[in-house]
Length: 258
Image (tube, rainbow, N blue to C red; front, side, top):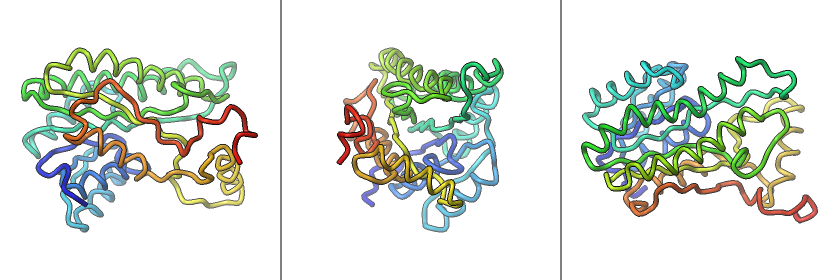
């Protein structure tokens, strides 16, 4: 690693597993002090312990990002522990499956609150601190689902991620002269858990068929894109997204994948 985030402090929401854990590991390896915010504290503590064992610096706290008071407490705690927040990697999200006809209103609200309203709450809480310092990087985990493609059973998820992309454009304009950038990464299919049952393996094999590169991405593939957006190398990039999907959205049809 090259120390691209040396001396920086980063908060990673949803950092207890999957993509969030990958972001936390990569940021810490590049020199950042990392606060892992996750609903399940034990998972966050396990990721933090592994980072610390590897020579990095990380800690964890329990946070429900759909709750304004808990988000405000997360920002306050990060400042208390590390003095400042340079980078906010907002990765927390959920993706339950439900068709429109069967979906309960509460299911819709839960997904939109967790995936989209939370971005508003995070920005509202952290931006005054960042703009006061004239420095900040907000990096959001969006998705190709919603902004680029659709999936039956995930209308609420797709709506939330399309909303994320729309929100960040306006948000980026509001703080463009304050030294703060707001960008997102759009992951394709990422392997966030080890393959277990034959059914899980069959599902994974099916997903691979839609990816021109022929394999699922790893959390670190998203983390390295987030690293660029969180670094000073991306100082002139704002309101943008980077697609990281192994070419999944490129073919006009499945016959285009050789």
